Image 1 (cartoon, rainbow, N blue to C red):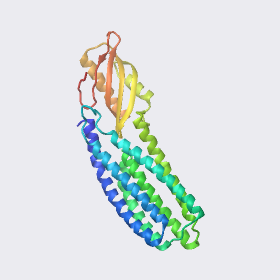
Image 2: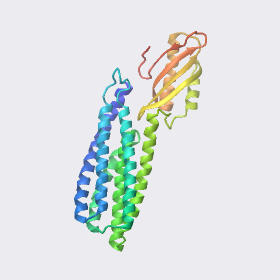
Image 3: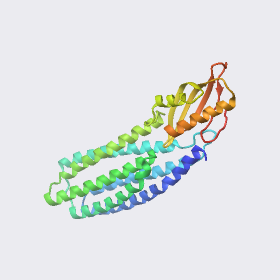
Image 4: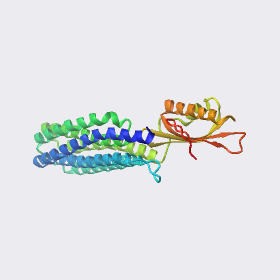
Amino acid sequence: MSQYTEAGHLADKSSQPLKIALVIVGVIMAVEVIGGILSNSLALLGDAGHMLVDGLALGLSLFAMALARRLATASKTYGYHRAEIMAALTNGTILVLVSLYIFYEAYQRFFDPPQVRTPLMIVVAVIGLAGNLAGVLLLRRRSRRNLNIKAAFWHIVGDTISSVGVIVGGVIILFTGWYVVDPIIAVLIGGIILWGAVRIVRESSDILLESVPRHINVDEVVAAIKGVPGVQDVHDIHIWTITSGLNALSAHVRIEDQTVSHSAEIVEAVNQHLARDFDIRHTTLQLECQSCPTGLVCYISPDQNRGED
């Protein structure tokens, strides 16, 4: 199975939890809209609006994952895997805007705190919390390996924190009548959402800018390649991420003057080191030798040996 087909297969496996999470978000949003109207709770209506944004974000994530499963073409040789990263960047940006809107609404409520029917507000918020926790459990494990799912995961985390905030605020208001608690909790919610959003925007931007993955040290990679018997030097090295979980490397490798079959063995050894130690599984290596007037060019993938011009 090629790297691109494998990535598409992983995207297909990851889409099912997103679909379930989308249904959960839709149901909770409907409950909060009804509960917000009946209880006259602006906090619940605001949270429902947040859920609407999250539903759109989850839909965008699913669309991007479906697009990423399309095979590579002659004009798009990497396929559509970057669609997931673009969706993650879009979702992260939306989260930033949502947090800023929460700050704005909180500022308004400091001057005019709304009066609400707190018992109904608390009950609806508890229902929302239960649904959001189910969504968090669905996406948590897969969010560690896929940036697009991580963005969707942080949307659900934001909803969960928001539900907790509404519950805490409702309880305090119920016993004290301090309606100013609502905007204070809203600011805390917005800060947590903003923290997660900035991380997602930074990570997705790094991938789009083809930065070196955070877990990889270039000097260590160079040292590992030089440690392979027959390798004399490494230069013009580039390491980047095609999409979440698919790292790539290109480099010029100077080797001793030897037969082509032995050169292929060196390339295979280099690829094994890169895959095992750095999770780099797509490589393009240009082999050069000092005694040759021109470099010997060899492009070999770690999972299937094939030569390309």
